[in-house]
Image 1 (cartoon, chains in turn green, orange):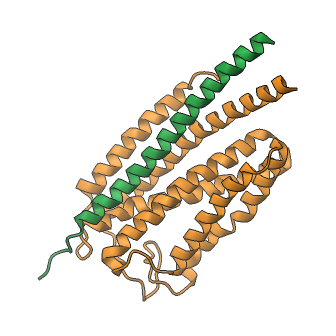
Image 2 (cartoon, one colour; image 1 turned 90 degrees about the vertical axis):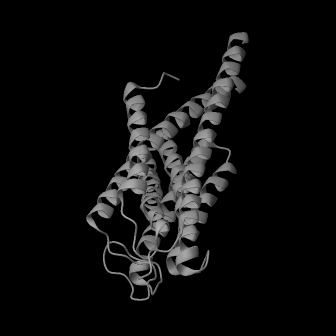
Image 3 (cartoon, each protein chain N blue to C red; image 1 turned 180 degrees about the vertical axis):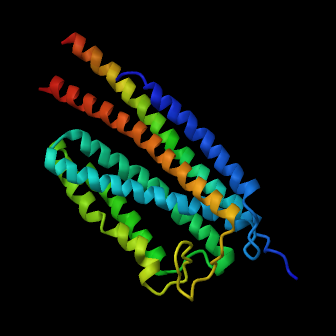
Length: 50
Length: 232
């Protein structure tokens, strides 16, 4: 009797996509947070000058 | 912007642990499917991603309704957060589905009702984010976003029920599927436990990401208001 098909490569590809996309989203969130913090500092300085 | 609340820190830690546990369950605990082999294990996170994506769009739908009633900006922020997270997880769902389909259906893609409606849904919400960029006035943008999220939500039940109403080769795991479906399987107790745990994990992940994204949205909104004040 034949065993299950060997589809390990597809499983690895699937997990790479799942964690890869999640990681990209997390990096995008962190990067946007950092940009907002920089903007906030800049705006505070401008507010002080005024 | 105030520091991260302790509850959010705990929730983030719990999410990471749950995600690690779910991954280990999928790899080590869930049994190997007799015909499809290892690729069947993609199913646990594929369905959970689809669920999370639709949850995001549902949150945007509810936030849209609440915004139109209350006109409070926070609901616009919640709506955008829901759509953004929904898009990320729906993309994971579509791509992992395609990877699963290659060895099982012998093709990366077919214009099956489920695949077609899921793609339309993803594009509808991608357009939501793009079109918002074109509206300068924050109140108009929020109103537009709310109406769009409500109308766009029509694509969600259409996608969900597509495999239950139309003739399709996409398997229906819970409930009866089409006799033409290719890649169906009966879940054993261990498979069901892994599946339910994956769903719970992705639901917690959704709440955590939504909370983080809403905090960021509120911060961005405060800065936009400060900018307006300085420019005035």
